[in-house]
Length: 132
Image (cartoon, rainbow, N blue to C red; front, side, top):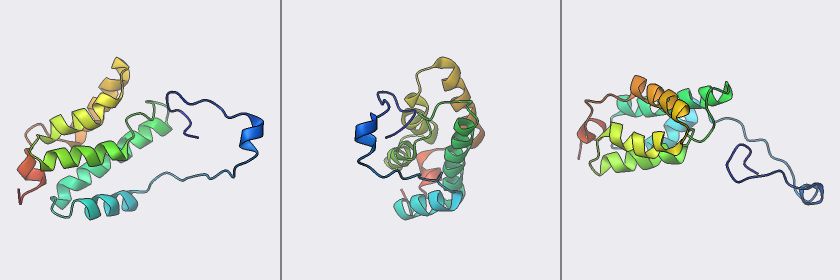
């Protein structure tokens, strides 16, 4: 059960009794680095670290109840990086992959502020993926 996701609800007691509960810890910085480095070995390591930072900053804001968990999306970061590799500007890709996941305007502004602290408007695709 994914708590805090739209469209989910608590399971009834009879159904819950049939399953084991697994608490999954928050993903650590080292693990995110490893995942992104494995998927994007051709990326600029310093800039890739900024994408890790976006995820961790958003995760912390969600933990502090400043935002929902909608934009704390590793798949969104990975999809953004794949799109950047294909030539889209990083700021546009992260906007589509992360910022666009929240629909509340106030929350969207907080997420945009987090992204702006890490992802520069002037970056181009070849800054993140120099071989392309």
